[in-house]
Image (cartoon, rainbow, N blue to C red; front, top):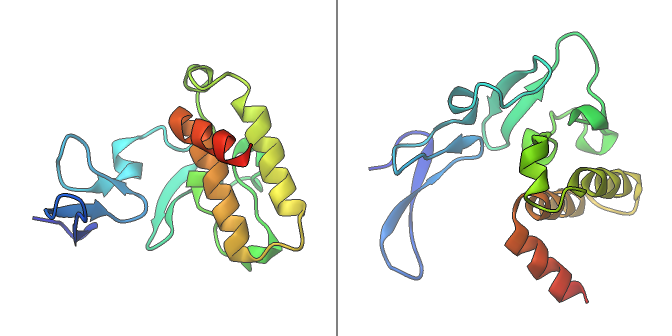
Amino acid sequence: MCNSASSCVVNRWSGEAECVCAAGYVSVDGLPCQSVCDLQPNFCRNDGKCDIIEGKGAICRRCDSLPTLERAAKFNPVFEGEPVSAQYYRRYDDDELSRYGGGGRALASDEIRHIYEDRTLSKQEMEERLRIVQLCSTDEHFADFVRQTQA
């Protein structure tokens, strides 16, 4: 049975009903979906405050200073004042990055900078490209797939 942080969908391959967590919520070991802020107390770095924005996901806020790209968040006029989802900007521990090739942080940071500097992209195109960068930095198989399809 799904909880309020999830919705019930039918798996198109198995035909079974599954609970899919809403943005900012995760299921651990098959348990009901819970806030990533509650499950990972260190989700936000540098004493940031983790919040869930319904339909958007987890965000990290700093009360005392404006976030920078290097600190894992950036504000951009394209988003018209909306908080940017932390899923794109969360900094990963060095050991986690080393599992995916070590230089991922610099590459992802450069890619994100280029995405924001490209004024021809729509908000949706920016979000799609940011999602691809995020997936490449955390999923080695997805990164391999992207490299193969872009060759």
